[in-house]
Length: 144
Image 1: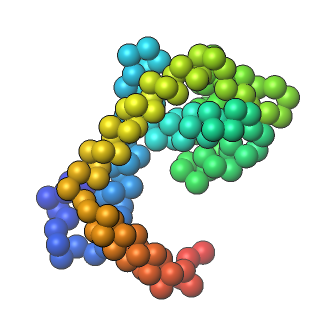
Image 2 (image 1 turned 90 degrees about the vertical axis):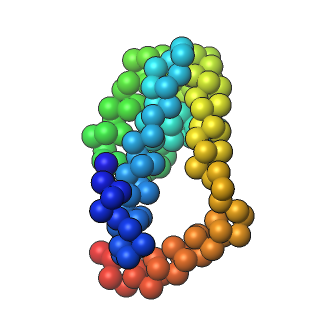
């Protein structure tokens, strides 16, 4: 993780965005009964839980936002091996064990959300999102 002592109020917004992404990426959701889940693992579990069943290609498209095909394949293989999901032709389905894991991990995720937003008003959050949106829109022409 970035050393936050290097980042201060005078640091460019990109440094702050990078640090925020690093923190979110390295959050670990440690469960009592189902192991630990990192950001990409939580995203897959949440996605499959919401859909009950999804095309493998849909799942990969979602996860590729966060990481590479290789990492995505590893997460899917881990979940199949651990019995959290099962592959059924081109679809991925959540199992009963996967639903139990989801219930436990989602409680931890809610705690993470509460801690992340502690002391942040709705107005401050809205301002942050609006500012980031403007920065992104302003720089979009430079993105490749």
